Image (cartoon, rainbow, N blue to C red; front, side, top):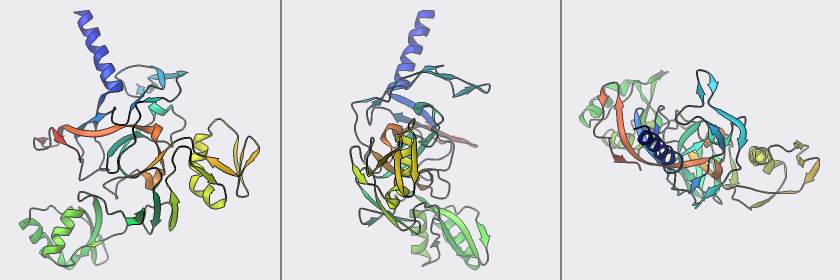
Amino acid sequence: MGKVILVTLLIVLLVRSFFLESFSVSSAQMEMTLLRGDKILINKTAYGIRMPVTLLSIPFTFDKIFGIKSYSTALQAPYKRIFARGVDRGDIVLFNNPLETDKPLDKRSLLLSRCVALPGDSMRVENGLFIINGRSYSGCPNTAEEYSFKASAKKELDDIAKELQISIPVGTVRGDSVITHLSKYDAFVLNESLSDSLTLVPCKKDTLKSHTFLIPFKGKIIDLNESSLVVYKQIILQEQEGKDVKIEGGELLIDDIRQVDYTFEDSYYWMLSDNSIHSTDSRSIGFIPFSSIVGKASLIWHSSDENGTRPERCFSSIK
């Protein structure tokens, strides 16, 4: 009996480490595509298998047990991925937060977002809008955005929404307007029924206003100047961790040697959450390195809320 239990645990650990892992959605970041209470399967082979970095860790535990770390950094393996394949545009991806450089790569907090720009793409951020390769990014129909409507139109809008079986969340009153959040599809349907009733509230969470830049890829060489250092400073600091890196007077110095250009050591992606109101994604943490990517969200295997199981969402694919 003991052997059976041990073998079973080893198989589960192997599958969880290299092939499939369950992830519980606990935030509104990907609403309306993924809801709080969804339990999803992450395909860890979708982009190649990332080998463990932290070798001394207690299996099946969170990063801390009773406030004490469940892993040790005494034995660390270099980053390695076998059968590597790039992320596809539109994939919903689970990745480690690249800004948590005080933790090992595979022990950083996990985030879930949609990949909207690939290595080599041209990106422009302007007044909260994203223009990728010359085309405005509008998101998927489930993308949640903030909309405003006149308080005087609330009853008429509520009546139409009830008729169309659309739920309008309780909003925040600002002057004579009400601010609420809806999916792009629901907002479109409501506006078709009651012309121009809803107005999109632009997202203010952009970090690189009115600036065009390239999504870097491994081996890409860029000239260094004040402008490029502003855009890629975070990447350079992360890639050159452990070295003496300084940016002085618009110049980059690595171990006191002035650099006139820079070659990227990893490929990067731009991730945006479907819910722009409640999100931690590239708007706030910047470029996402390929090394940080864990896998692809592929299936909702269970879903529940305060009212119990949501059977219509169980065993449904993720798009």
